[in-house]
Length: 219
Image (cartoon, rainbow, N blue to C red; front, side, top):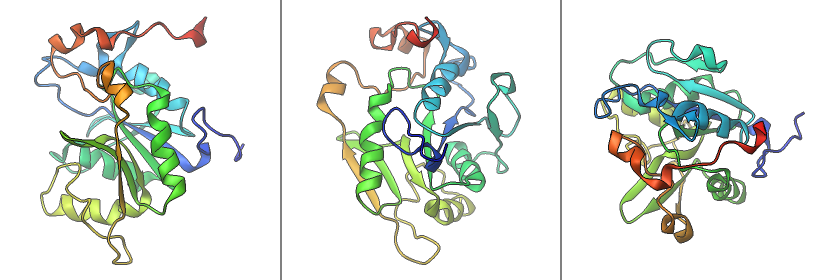
């Protein structure tokens, strides 16, 4: 089984996927992870997508156990108020392999092909973190994190720094600076609607780019 590769060509046993679903959905007014898109909940769709690209899937569900009915391992926050960075820390603390693919649960336009460049870059160069970037900034909620980033994540949380990209200028345990690889988004992706756009309000769900056909695997 160790040689099994994901549908995007990455060795599955080197990658765990962490779905970040511990937010409070204040702007949505309800738990947005349970909103229906294309016949699936946002969380269910994202977790199913992660199954196709990683060896295991975990849910970073905040400080309380939620969504256990989906059958995935739950990863809990231990520091209240840490936001998604605390979820990332919790996932990295549990990591028993080289890479953690962290993805927010509210990006309904994501598809398998959007992860291919991340994995290709991780295998071509010696890096600690691979992410997308454009003129609007970084995409830390769809990124590949090596376990070597954990000391920097811990340090920032201990110092009250909670932005997901706040630790990227930090150091590994050996004192060496983190090596961060920024990838440009494929213009063809953006032309049909930014696949990294998240859903924060009910109006966001009205966008046609969120529509996906029902899974062909269930046919």
